[in-house]
Image (tube, rainbow, N blue to C red; front, side, top):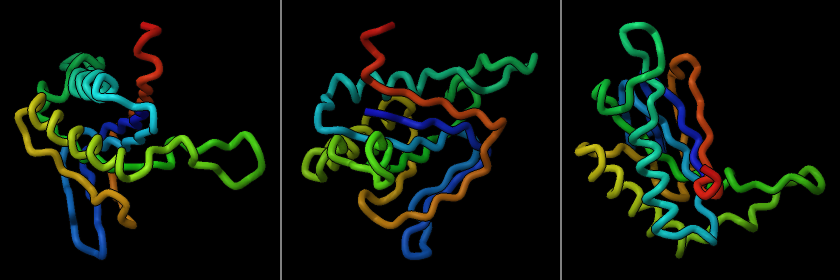
Length: 152
């Protein structure tokens, strides 16, 4: 699994010009799921997202986590995070999980994040043509990949 975590002061997702998810301060999380992903990957990544200390403290240092700032999460599925671009100019998405695997993991990620944060997770609609608006704060953008979890 891959996640692009963006610290935002606001973000929303629209599908067919209707808002499906909207947050103020928190994280916009773009989530890519690949065929090899497991529940272990999901749990590791969810805990990393919730624990990531990238919000400023009273000294302007990035020391606060999502809960410390009463932040929220907008979770967006994004299979293009697994684009392979080595050959040619048209990306291949062969590593991205097919919907029959990705949808249950995406829905489980929502539930896991809700359990960890104690808050409703705002979300897009899996597979829909989504329009994402955000006000990136900083900007602070962190890329996480569960393939890195064994290296640390």
